[in-house]
Length: 529
Image (cartoon, rainbow, N blue to C red; front, side, top):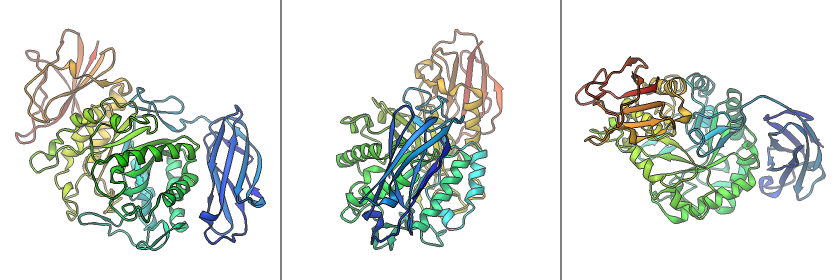
């Protein structure tokens, strides 16, 4: 007998529960449940089911069309109690729906209802672990929601350690997702106590309408992902299938990312290799065949080159989006400027036909913490802010991260200073300019002799009726054509204040210079009258 919903609102998660006396030594392997849902228009959506302990198997499904659906669930081997069929009445519901990768529209992403998606994200790799170990995850999520964050980068498997000294001292209980132990895992078993916690956090994100980039495998240098003779292709498929079966139905699971810094495949060596590209294409195609709801499949890079169009030229439609990382400069002298980000983005995405997010450029350092990761030492508030604006002036949505909540630390009740700048960044793009129509327009700025990292960046609408220029480190700028009558103002990315802008001898100079060693950054906005 299947406990099945009779009615459901469109884009709502429904659950089909089957009960069967479990006589299987490894039920995650020994029994496979599949479901097929046929929409009123005849479209068929196939989704896998999953074992959930005791005598319980489940199927989760989220209909994207109103009307009468037909469903059929089968099992292999066949068991009457796990098989059945029926109908589902789906009512209409006004909602934005799933996130879609739409290259060329907005900044590469729209919601199903056609609304452009301005993604502003936070990296909280171990959020599921924080919840499992008693952290105030709900309070943290509600605060991030109020700040405009709508996408979180979260890993399903938690790591206790990030080299060289990044031990996660907050872990007060095991976050191991498999059976066995952390040193001797049983990949044919899953820790359902852990997944009950993951369920609770995912369902909270669903209620708050905060998206998740679900990172299915962690860094490739860590066990077991660096041991492909143990974590074999068969066990990898079992793992990925279980995650898809359990979470693919949720609206909030906006993006599936199979492996963090995918070039670590297959041996944990962080260098570019062709084998990793072949793995990425194979896994992306398998996921699209298995995950019936059609969420975005993305890859997260380590090495920035060669360009992604070159890497994936054998199957350019397999990967929907790149969750791109480049940290810019992060040394003592130049870390505050985050130099080089826009230049590397241009190289990495030359010829790329998919979507992209600027998803990683450092983690804002909290000087009150022990320096566990030397690479973070000079990633201060200035580095955070400039990284955000450099990425956005490449017409990419931006995800950041903070040591308080990134990984080895759990300080969920307090924000670091750069979060205030991130909130102002969002307000600028969503309230002051038509962000979805802005594209890079370097040709609008007059050439100049700029030091490294200080060249102004420009965005403009196709009609050039709105132009924004970012000065990363003060100075002045000139437009190549200053003939149009415009209203002009300076926007301060540190305070959100605006000041009327006027040119002197054709040059625009910000109201305040800042210090000689760290000039202020500014944004100039011009609009045709």
